[in-house]
Length: 227
Image 1 (cartoon, rainbow, N blue to C red):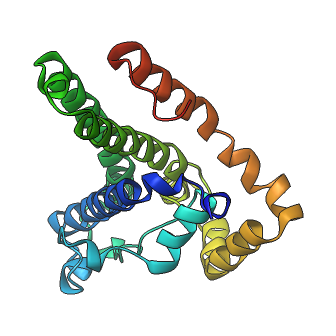
Image 2 (image 1 turned 180 degrees about the vertical axis):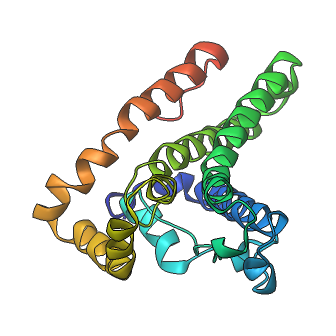
């Protein structure tokens, strides 16, 4: 069963909780910023909310657990309602990944404070392990979402940012066919030859991020999530 999942089975409860938090904040950031800039599309659909149920996508969450790469429900944005369409569109697209970077920083700060104040050391071994495993995945998944969402491929946030600088004719052609992006992505996930030359090289970026974070936890706190 563990080989079927991207993460160790015993860590699955922590990973699920982390996914609920980080995806929710990411999509909330998109929806809230669009609403503040004058587009109430997401607001009318109940997306300006910190309720995970309005943001999580079942298939995207399952794939994140199985394949290491997934998604939440995209926030609908009508950029024509923005006063300054281009700059506000870029900001709305960028705040999602930036929220993940901010959460990673906050997560690392919390762990450091808990360690520096002796709170973690005073807890039982089981509680210590639970705290460290949770914050390890909290930091890891936030960093991964920040990095991967900036890849300039549809429908990722990086594409939404870059698309604002594309010629209108090229952008229009891409937008006409963007509905195929999810189907193509699923083919890359489940067909091994396609995955080997497309998705696996991208996912290999997780190795240095994972190793660096694991090493940081080990050197600072004397705790390694994976040996």
